[in-house]
Image 1: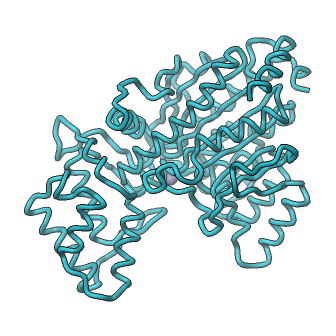
Image 2 (image 1 turned 120 degrees about the vertical axis):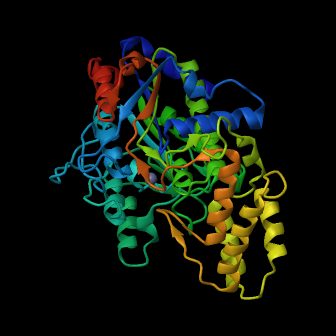
Image 3 (image 1 turned 180 degrees about the horizontal axis):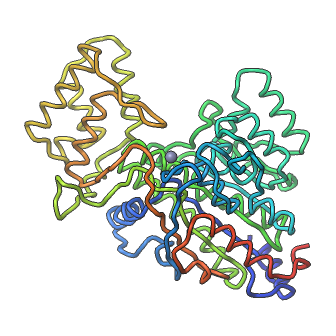
Length: 464
Ligand SMILES: [Zn+2]
């Protein structure tokens, strides 16, 4: 790493100092300002360190509007397209205009200028946000087509939980496999086992059955791949093959999943992990302060979380969330495992389980009314098996899970407005070369345009 940094430093003199050679583009999927404050409160609670998260200390901060061509409330496909290409499109469309004309992302444009390119995410590598940097499809779930576009993209490094085109149980997965081979991509499922001599790398989860997520940090607690480690692996790879210039997009994808679930503790853990990944880029910036640009933003706001709600009045108690040991999704899995078992389960057993996993009755007080509502949900879930499930984009929740987490919100002060996205603007933070260009109220389409304007003014020969 040190030797490579020195090698990169030696060649700097041929480039203009006003253009970034190393561009980091962090996208917190669903990360509104409430998510950022949740992460910051969490950092204070967990570490005792009362300084801001690293990106809140960046010299430039602004906001970007996120509406799509079809709705004031964007999805990740249209927002990803706006953030990658600078063009608005309709919800569900990836890398194309509303009339289906394909548009190139800045990753591809920078590649044409000689930049190395990398994409990292904690969710599927063919999910809408990363896909918007290499694919062109009218619907975000066309995974085999998205994977085929990736195979032809020339992107140097891709890391994520999985590629869903590979997991399809029909002929097309062979197509994905052979296309990736044809274009010289090699898939690795161990972050420590990427050899030095492979220039086109795909890094995926070692659990092939879990292509959609590397796992919530609240559940994995650092085991398995982390976004920070994946970011480090991407930088090492790009420094090796493109030491003179590279572009790296890093998505915190599970921020969105936790927010869709209205799961404040999991969101807080994801925000910590996102900050850790940004720290990796920040350390790179400190070694290359005159050639590095870091932009941190979100594709949209999910869930609309606020710090404090009607129940907590002029206060919030996010420290109560530390007693939650598992994600809401994992908790719902535990409930359904017990329910599927078909052996009668007593209220006291469920109550003890909720105390153990969530801290209810222990750290988190439960009023008599709240206990009654939990008992009703217990009866519906385990005795009558007639509880109506609550469906969100990435999960469905039984009545007991839904009720338990509403009680947690009531006492912690996590205020949720939606299980979907909101049309609120998202924050933008920037540091390094050209950062000052982001210091005004922006639209999401402005961000990639500004990045390209910084680069296109420079002498292209310095990247060849
Ligand atoms: Zn979402």
